[in-house]
Image (cartoon, one colour):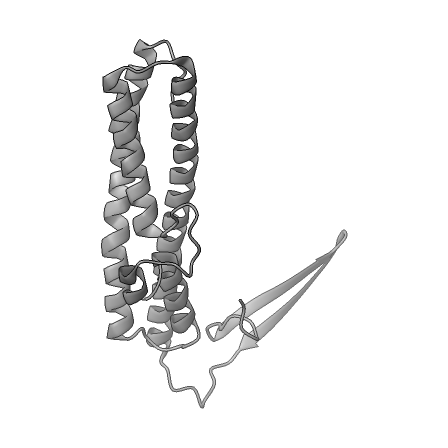
Length: 197
């Protein structure tokens, strides 16, 4: 959802460029400080930097979930093909289950997405913390960007809490890809079975 109006900008000199086909039009303009504005440029700069931090963490989280969903799909396919082929190597089966469990933990912690459940059937802890982490980030970004002043301590603390949950998940995902998947692939290779890519 977008609010009415464009982004706030700093006072200064700007060039507006319009390109229409091969024609190019340029016009310089000056944005003057609003004398009725109660926020300093420093407060506005802090606001903008904080919004960028929130957006960056949101992008990392979205990438994390995308990667985990792709990996989960591959793991399901491998498990199905192993069953179809009648391969029941205990070490391979155990490792596959362990990796799937780690992937599920990352997905559920970041954006509760258990199969067959809708957003209206969330566990109590998800409801108590104010929704899933992506929902919290989205609301936080909206509340900060609608206000031109420096972020409040409550907003900073809330972001710190979210980052404190997301960053360990990013590290867990990196370890999964660097350690667990190669170990699983070695076990798959030992069975002459296609590996996870």
